[in-house]
Length: 562
Image 1 (cartoon, rainbow, N blue to C red):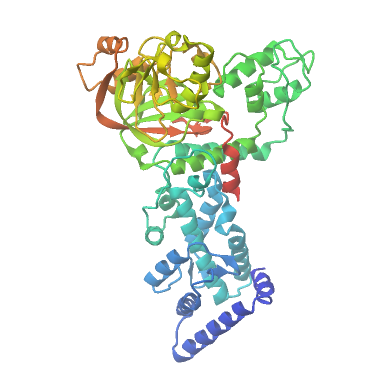
Image 2 (image 1 turned 120 degrees about the vertical axis):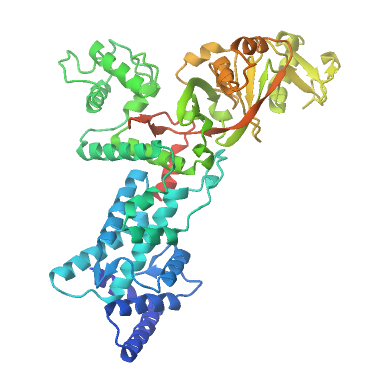
């Protein structure tokens, strides 16, 4: 099989034939001068092939490009061009282990075909067939499979360590710094060969957070479910929310899916198209499990979640495994603040234990909260809200033109950039902009609430309280201009200031109800990471899926599968 592929491709590539002819000529010359065994012949084959390679031409095996050209040269020259994946002309157990790990990369959300899997399988099939027939494997084939497997190792290692997709090339506001490799892949392969451990070596490249390995197991489980799946997953569409007692043509499919995911046991129903009370209870369980408001109503978000097949969920999980590989090294720290925008949740972690979780409100779709990392350094109690220029121009100025009392009604004032008060009546509100700041005074109606938590960044995004407390009960909480509104700011402030005994809960409460700002510097900088994870696995290995509120998954998935 491999030989037929080789023959057909060589017929159309004269340059390749010339290089192969020179290689064979050189090999025959060295064999005439010296009496070497097959391994030495294979060394020469690999050496001369690399020596004949042209700098401006991709290194290839049967015209399939090898990606890690530099690593291949480094690795083989350091081992005097000795083969690594065969011994005495046959494949080693280590070669089979690498092929297995390439297949297993699908549980990392990667595409095994990216690592020459088809061609590797063809070589393995050929070698196994030769073994049955007691036919020696050709030197060219032995050299090819060695280079192919090494390149697969290097390429897979790079994707596991830093990710396959560069977030900077994606649309949208991804501000996660592209990770730079800290590992020498030739040295890594050398260690793997010496220890005879491919899997354990590759695992050292995983993100250090435990959810990554747990996520692999969730995908593995979904893959087994996918193999048994016989359902029709055509999307059920609704124009309005379906409530108990109502009928809809999609109810039979939805009932079937609830049973498929083990939320509903088989039962006898009177009308298959009626949304009955038994199904209602199953829907509540499904909603609870998927981070939806457990009201039992079949609304847009619940229907969308029920439309997701095992294959869809594998794709969603794959996208987020890639996002985990992008995460900065700050996640290895003992203390951090994580905001998962897609889950509308903030978690405060210390020594990898979650000390505090709370609901948050994030940016609207047209004011998306950016994805980035920074460090929290201070807290502002009873803050002013300095309105962004865009809000002053687009919202405040038109409002003042219609209602001269707008500023006083909103507890706002006009000040110079040095903080000096300006009479609003002296300001020209009919122009395109004003040369002043507009700010909202501290108080219960302040849009920032009673406290804000600052981590300086170019997006002017921070975490803050809000007077609109009722919004936290909503299922969709993409409602802000981009900042993160937090449900329980007082408890959060108390945890952040716990090292300072002077800041008791009473003092914090008092500071949150002043008529002036009070800035408190933290005694350490705490990493803040804004994430966008529509899937993750918890410490028990349970998978969690969320709505793609900013429609960002499809682009990453396309790049992953490309």
